[in-house]
Length: 430
Ligand SMILES: Cc1cc2nc3c(=O)[nH]c(=O)nc-3n(C[C@H](O)[C@H](O)[C@H](O)COP(=O)(O)OP(=O)(O)OC[C@H]3O[C@@H](n4cnc5c(N)ncnc54)[C@H](O)[C@@H]3O)c2cc1C
Image 1 (cartoon, rainbow, N blue to C red):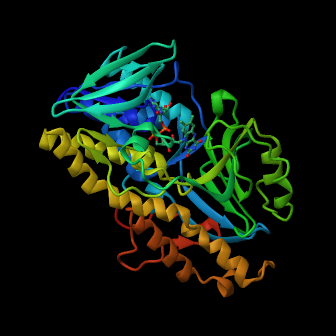
Image 2 (image 1 turned 30 degrees about the vertical axis):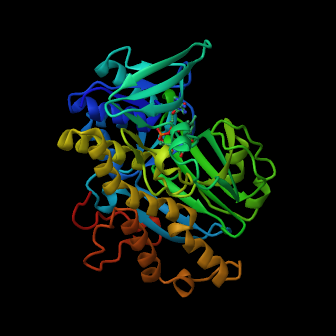
């Protein structure tokens, strides 16, 4: 099979194009926006995501625009440290976990697609509104920005058209309507002096009230000597439209962090100094029971929209791309290849979709808040023993498909007091 259309030039569609191209194909990508801009804020690329970028030959370019994740530290809403773990290669995984600006990663993939597949590989301003198919091809109805409509035919179609996928809607007209979870997320970036070692992610707060995650997405941003720092605050909120580009006002949220006292970062100042703040409601899209309709298949957020927490959205789209290219090469027939891809990926990712609705390992902050009744503690070991916290983290990492190195041997892999947590741990794993 050689003639494939991809719908959507997001990270999922673009890396799929690169994987197919490595396998000898030159897909055409239809993208609804007339021009791509580096939109979004920070995303967390898990170790297997870095492996994917390495395998499409972009490791060095990716490293140049991203930050190596070294430490992950958890605090209660008084700013007391609860737990810490190493990340990526510092934990013993084979590949780095890295933080990056979503838009910069997308632009890297986009430039690479144009270089490798040709300047015409992406058709811009082309919104796919519906598909139809017969035994040998798929027809896409396209509305262009200039008002023209057009029908194009391809041998098979991969729909990577994001959370509001038109293809998913057509394929699953009876699927449950997405609904608001009651949780609102504020996402922002702030330019500031590097905090700690410039490679740390912080998880702060009493999740019964509000949670905050902070991590750098660019060191020495544009030669300023400053870090571009991404932060996300979750709290209960009003329903708003599901739109990544919706501008938000953080002022009502800042006072929720009055009690936080961390010596190396003023989290309220961080929010006040934001360059940009976006509001995003957490919407439930229920997992699907099938991603394939004949010669049409779903990939990335179109297949498995999940809450953007836990850092799995982009990485899972990259894994989809790997598997779909492998199956097309192995099997040839598009329908059979898509069914085989669905069999490998769907249930595994659906488990992550459901896990992203829960607290994941962030539950340790709630456990501490409940056990201390919200008061400061004297000794964390009396509240949450290290072994209990370790077990929570190990189970979660296994659930999302990246078992913690060293855990098989029953070694403790987390630590407290980050100053001493610099050991490399265990054998290397993907
Ligand atoms: C503007 C934007 C900002 C984002 N910001 C963040 C962020 O800050 N943090 C985070 O965790 N995640 C963010 N995401 C989501 C993140 O990119 C995805 O979770 C992940 O990368 C999987 O990517 P995807 O390619 O499947 O979907 P997306 O990244 O959503 O890409 C889908 C692409 O398809 C295009 N498209 C949609 N409908 C059609 C259609 N009918 N015809 C043709 N093209 C279509 C869209 O314009 C888009 O370029 C953002 C997504 C977008 C679109």
